[in-house]
Length: 327
Ligand SMILES: [Mn+2]
Image 1 (cartoon, protein in one colour):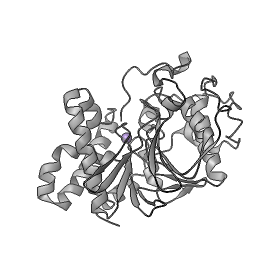
Image 2: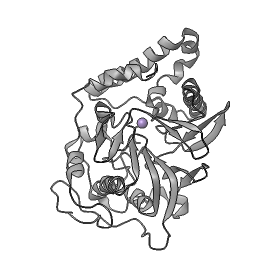
Image 3: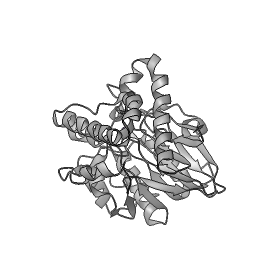
Image 4: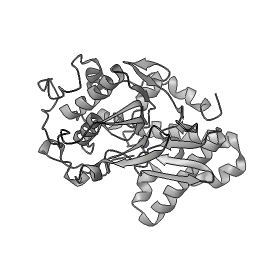
């Protein structure tokens, strides 16, 4: 493997990482997730499902070659699980990439929140995998417990640290969540001077810095969240983050990159490399899709279905989060 992948060998030895028990339960739930998602609402510890999302009857099924979603943050109150279910019921694809932060292990460890709709999302994803969709899961920083299991199959879902996807028109896209880069962006300039080894060292330090924070019960320190409070800097942070991701894709000989993490959907060329971010299902409801001719497009599901992400709290169970979700 290359230089970037190397330090993450460390992560795999982090055997303390455990699957949150509710997720394990969802994964082992034998019930069929599709079409019967409202079943089994009596599971202990699982809040009853309130049907809130619009029904899909009025929309024909859509097919894409590939769908990319990330930053769903199951296990948090901010997660728009009902809208994601609506999306997953409407949209089919040959391949589905889950580009990290699907389950929020950081939050689940601190307080338990796992309503039926979140179970339904997991079931729906597993059902797609069973029914022939090729599903890849590239964990992010919030579901890094899964990084201990990369290169394994999990109920037809393939876990990978990162992936290379080839589009129908022959472009190679690096698929990576992108958290490794948010703490690194600040130091990008002098790291470029110091070279590759300092760069990989910084990636590793960023990871362990957050491991220590987690041990102390502190949330993941995200530069993107920090800067969003300082709006003036947010724009330049996003631009720098996008450039760092594009650099990484170039470094690895790819034509483009697909990532998530900063909850900001985007497709734009950066110095000859295509930067794609599939957005999130917390602040917005966006996905990246590849058409059968290889064309890439951002789908804004709240716009398509004419709902506001702000309306996504249909019941008291899923009241808005007290604080902004951590990236
Ligand atoms: Mn993230």
